[in-house]
Amino acid sequence: MERGLGKDVLELQDIMDLIKKAGLIKTVWGIGPCYEKFLGRSEEPQAEVEVTDNDVCKAIT
Image 1 (cartoon, helix red, strand yellow):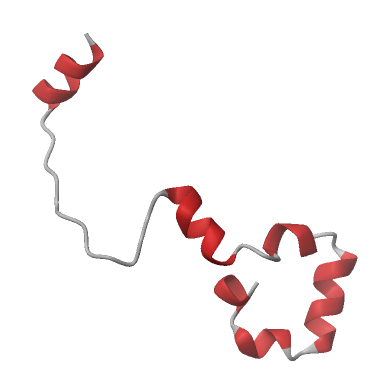
Image 2 (cartoon, one colour):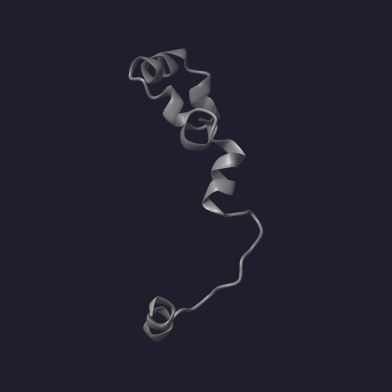
């Protein structure tokens, strides 16, 4: 939740109550570092990769 809404929002009980009432608490709660791992992204810099249409066609066929 901190990731999407910011730490300040967690302190505002009215906003937290609205999120719970709307049934979104499971959607926005507990994502944290697991979300980054799920996407396969890390904080480490990654090398840029260029792929041409020809390379994509070779991989598909």
